[in-house]
Image (cartoon, rainbow, N blue to C red; front, side, top):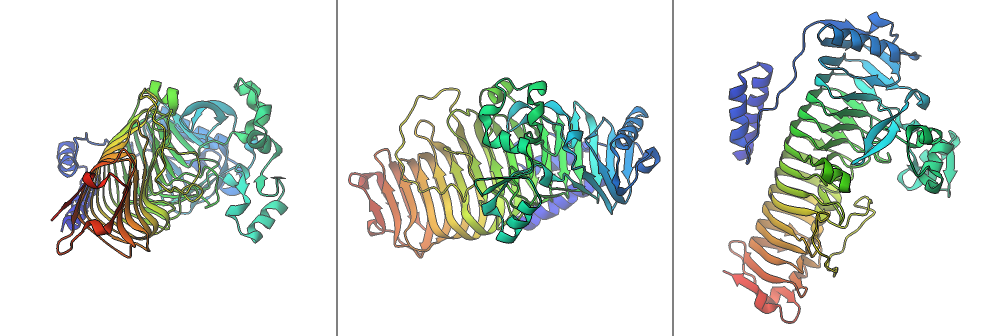
Length: 554
């Protein structure tokens, strides 16, 4: 009944937007459904004036370079007070497109914007990547300090990323690898392919790169400096709707320090082998919504970030007040992901009614010592997963840059404690509700750090079928309520060096032992079986001296 109510509510909300109902009514409905106060997301509107790209000299035959035609059409639209730049059906080859305020770039059905394989069309600029200020090639679609901007329609935007990215042999079939090598480029160690010598040097021989990275000094290595495909920085009132974004040089869509952002009905795609092939990276953004989007990518799918290390902490802009609903993720390193660049903080996120199919990891939280920042007040409910190669839910505060499959975690690791300072990351105050997973390697993997355990998490109404169960190391204040596991041997739940861990209404099948409790820091473990079942100390493996820390409730 609750799921039906949620769907009905959301349908009504969209109807309100389309019908331009009063903002106050829309705002009240959103507040009613969320566990935190959230302002109304302002969706941009545009004048009806239309500027047809073909009227500005563009030719949609896939061979004429239309960079200047796009610039003329967008400038004319913006100078006239705004409106719609219409991209008709056709194959529109172009260099970088720079957006302007009050412009809706609208792709008709059958329109394909493809960015040129001539990488010299993308000049080096001062930009951002992976949470830091960097010199990069100009993003294929870019815009800074804009108001009221949109990309909409039913067309496709293709970043031609194969001319930018390195490729790892292990991610391809033998036939795909042989075809790629035959196409040219540079092969290193027999298992890495680069599209150019400059790309290879930047990745493999970093000692040759200039210590002071300026636009001038990095010019010989520019092909190594892959841009994100869609870079919108410090923009207000942004709408991306209906379009397919695919084949990006690095990350696909990266709104940075934006407010009032709506992403709706998008298809975001990258080849499964694409290096840094993230789908959506919301970074230091606030007041936004991601609705009914589909992802099939080579790295993290829906990723929340807020800057890296000292620069991110100085920026001090958390990603906050974001609603993510009704999205589907196929391939990707993670379905919904926070980190690892989260030094500015992440808070007040609501993720609901999402499906992950074959995603490497379902709900993925990652950071490491040195990042700093707090991730808190995150709510996830009505999440469905199937065929997950690693964990349904993973917390890793020792992230080392690898994918979940490349970085298996075992738990039960003893870690030295260090003093807490501004570089210490914190993950706390999260609620997982109505989580279903049919098929994973592990149900839950939680690896905290001793000086700042993962803290105050509630897992409610979960049913997971996996080879391994729950593993908790360095956590505090966790509640598992009405959790059902089906595992293939081993322990259904392992608790190590953690405190105030409560299982209320817990059941499992397929295990050898129900619980394993260990670690000299472990205390206050409370276990209550599901209705109609019993749990005794015979079901628990515990290290000497820990029995007194375990309380069994009827």
